[in-house]
Image 1 (tube, helix red, strand yellow):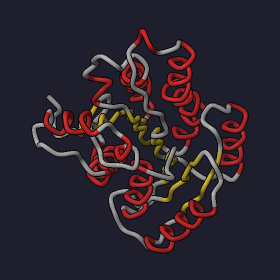
Image 2 (image 1 turned 60 degrees about the horizontal axis):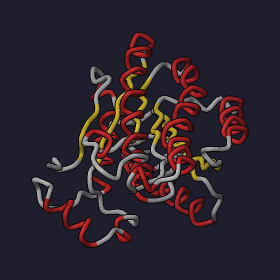
Image 3 (image 1 turned 60 degrees about the vertical axis):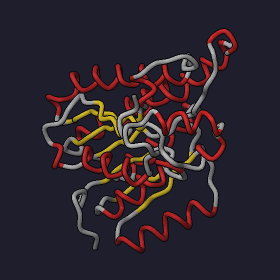
Length: 250
């Protein structure tokens, strides 16, 4: 069986099929957690990934599938989870969508769409699971925000504002839930090398590297280790914090 700082805990991780979410999935399994691994689409390769990681680290990984904006499917998945009496100690709200564009050029429908995925779906899933986490003995909620939700600039009228709202949600929820044994924190990555960064404009990418004190992009593993720490009992008195993982963007 796997040993680690998350041994004996069960984590629900959204958007765990690629990028940062996939890194969280592996890091949590490596640290001994059982994982409910969410993906929007049921694909054989994702099920295979879950089986491979479970066998490698000796943990249980249960894939679940629903669109974050499909409230009925989300509720059905949570009801099934509770019916099976699978405890949840950790929720990692990772799923989200990027967007860049000046406000004057961005349709309001697009801004609403980004908020629906990056904020409202996060709030809904958290609300559905929160009482269950408390009944499971308490635990930790980690929300994925962004350095661009802290350092708002031109072009962030949708993504940056949605992530700033996630930060505000984190602060409010941490104040409400601390007495119930649930800590709520957020991570704010900067430029992280994922499949998405491969599609970035080269000048924009280089500008972000130049604007970083460490003069490089981060890795998904560097973010995953911070998220695992926040989920663990090692962070037992850390609540309501937004942890930057950005090499300090200037």
